[in-house]
Image 1 (cartoon, rainbow, N blue to C red):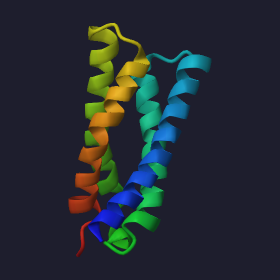
Image 2 (image 1 turned 180 degrees about the vertical axis):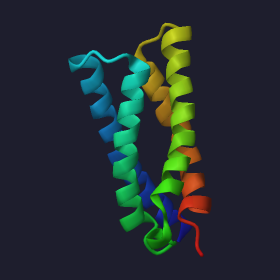
Image 3 (image 1 turned 90 degrees about the vertical axis):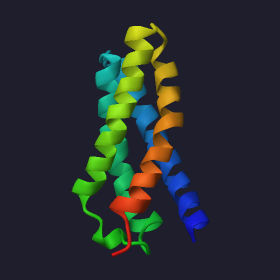
Image 4 (image 1 turned 135 degrees about the horizontal axis):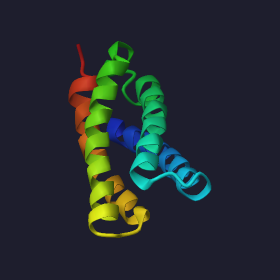
Length: 125
């Protein structure tokens, strides 16, 4: 069951990642928003997409109906803090492309998110 749930989480993660990357790119390329702010905006949109899909599909049989958006958002804010710190480090401290910061965040943040979702947000009651 855990493997199947993780695979669903991975699919939702891909959808959320595509959402995040798309919103981020629009913010950077078309709206010329500063990278940390663009990243935060993209992260929030991706979190809402992820919550809807994880609640109704990934964790539906594992307490999804009992999940509260506030718990999901608290976990997401922890992810956002790590995500933003990575972006700040990459762009402002190292002078790298914001896309390097994005790539680093996309490798580091998802395992943290799965653990928070599995054991806290969508835990069995």
